[in-house]
Image 1 (cartoon, rainbow, N blue to C red):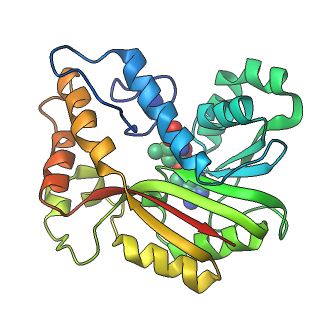
Image 2 (cartoon, rainbow, N blue to C red):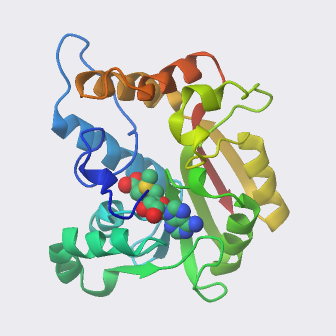
Length: 255
Ligand SMILES: C[S@@+](CC[C@H](N)C(=O)[O-])C[C@H]1O[C@@H](n2cnc3c(N)ncnc32)[C@H](O)[C@@H]1O
């Protein structure tokens, strides 16, 4: 999925981000621009990282950093030190290339590393914040992610993660017929409450679940409708949201 195919190069995405975006109010009367699409994805990062309540100089770890432009954005805008972790060597090569200037400009404040979010190659209590943007849907064992995030965070450190889950109690049986990446197993859609429970079991406190779908699905669908994917299964995300079987969530917690 993230090897030879550079998902970030598809017209569904832009600016080397790979997320559906957190969108503001849109003028219904005109086409969306690539700049707006890129801004939506950068804003998803700002929303997630803000839940960490970061201070300048904090050490943040991004899980599933992809092409690393969100990590670079956080380091540049907030004066924090960001380490991006991804299991894909191809993604990390792209991240190093795309962010070559930022890595140099930011000195040691931005770095990229290979590893799995279920076995994080970091020491206990070594970071102030852990965050993830649209990556947990790829992970089979979210309880392991919760345990590992708890382990690497210092006491009082925060976790924030955004991606799509099912609302608790929703009948998700129709999703594989509607969403190709769920049918193939690339994406797994679980009840959001299961992940919240994993965080609590791992020892996290103040576990908070926010539905942010109103900022994601209709606007993302408008973007898809402008691309060559306008007749694809990708349009079914909005249908799943409107049917109440998928939503986009921002989950945060404190160690
Ligand atoms: C949809 S991309 C999101 C990239 C980035 N967060 C963004 O919003 O632009 C998901 C990323 O998670 C990575 N990934 C998936 N499973 C992983 C795992 N178990 N450990 C580490 N990275 C993983 C993939 O290689 C991919 O780069």
